[in-house]
Image (cartoon, rainbow, N blue to C red; front, top):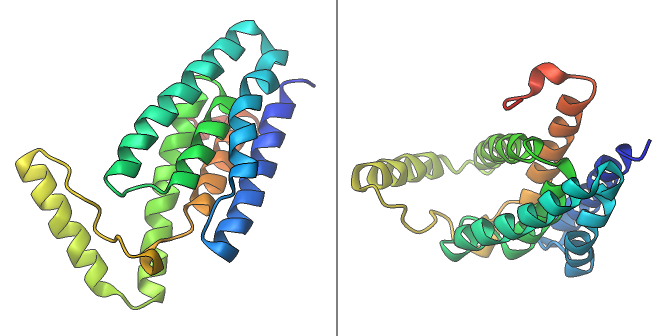
Length: 177
């Protein structure tokens, strides 16, 4: 029964963050900062090694997330949310969760662009990707205006939920085993 607690806590935290992100375009620190600290404790029920791995995942997620934040690809609240929920998945399920989140984020961005009738976004993204691939360097983010930001906590909720399904009822969804 103890192994369900981290997944439940992650879904609840992601749902609260997504609601806040949709309504205010911010993910609150009062949610993400305690979650990062609590994650190693929440997984302690599955063993002390899981708790150590959770600490490593928090640090890695913060480091990689900070790099993505620095170039404008990820908001600060989103990176703290990812650093708080990724360790709840454990390893290698956290990699699956991050991949599902990236896929959900891409689909969500496409839906938002179509809904806003911003077809130039697709042209800009494809040209940006072509330049990045041809030069071998990742440039700055395409959209940097605050009104162009999307509620990425929703993508994190979707990614975490699919990862939870992959670990329980739908193991065929696992990318890494």
